[in-house]
View 1: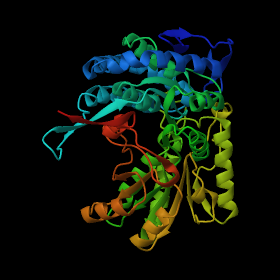
View 2: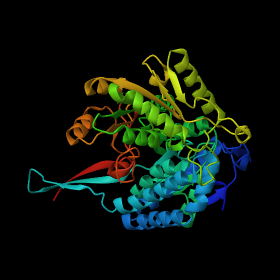
View 3: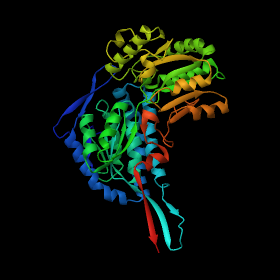
View 4: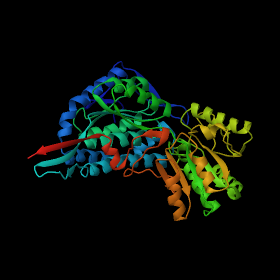
Length: 478
């Protein structure tokens, strides 16, 4: 296995030989060192991608699909080893890591199939001597920037449709989590993609992004990350009208309807909230519960959260792992303190777990809070961590108003067994992804993206491949 960058069909060290230590958040040990490149490496990768573009574009959909199918097959054959690496990098449990790796394989498989279904149109003309045709043409070189929380899945969600469409790719993983992404690129290498078609570089995010923005060979950038960075990329891309897909932050409401039992509501709330310790862009973050159910729900959710086993994700008995780094721990402590200072109550968690096994590592207990008000930071800022705040509501109109009262609009959740309510709430909530009785709604075959300040464009589904194409219209006089 090569733990290196991948440029022009070969594995490579950083141009200046820099390396970075990858830290295991469970014990803060160094998993291993990886190359840490920079702008010059990104420029070399873009040049390789640009040089490979024309030949790759000319491949048939079926030819491109064969490489994507093979990549999916290789990923699945290595799921256990890749999941172990991912757990050591991110901290999530082995079960969650395996789910992410298989999700990445599904992206390559889906787009191997979808590329054979994407087609233009024969448009009826107004005269007998004209033929009107639309074509979908690949954009060119695509820059793909992924964060640390789902490093393999999110780069696969960008690279697979781009490659299927006929674009060439330069991927940039987060500096904290390059290893499993490098394992993914080993699969891509062995799948036989032509040299220069799929490249991977590491390095400072600002340097790499700036190269993507300013290099005229890069025609499209797909970025997953914070709203602030997304806005910065958008402002810089305006100078050249560079195409962007932005999947940014979220602050997902979770509305419990009164036809759902407290037991079911608490079970699904805890399952959704503490996946990857809340470090998920679509994690539910504000839990709206009918007033008459609020206290019972909060108590039961706290009981279930407190029962989760905290430990190293490599332990198969672990329910929740560590946070990714000490910055996340400090952020959770600040949110808990703010809740307490403003009159809220912590029912469980709210601190680092006690005991010698938790002295090293980035640990924080799953937390449930009540008495939460709109003035608290956790209601205004994306928490990105394991805090479940409970808010009572009097009627569904109030719940929807409160749920929509945010600049974010990535995901929202509804628990109900009333079909009419499901449709009405699904239509009323201002978010790009709505999970009704489903706390894990993402899939390769459906569009993923947000409204308002949560981004622009969609990844996944048919929309995901269309984002890497330009529609061209031909008018032919015969």
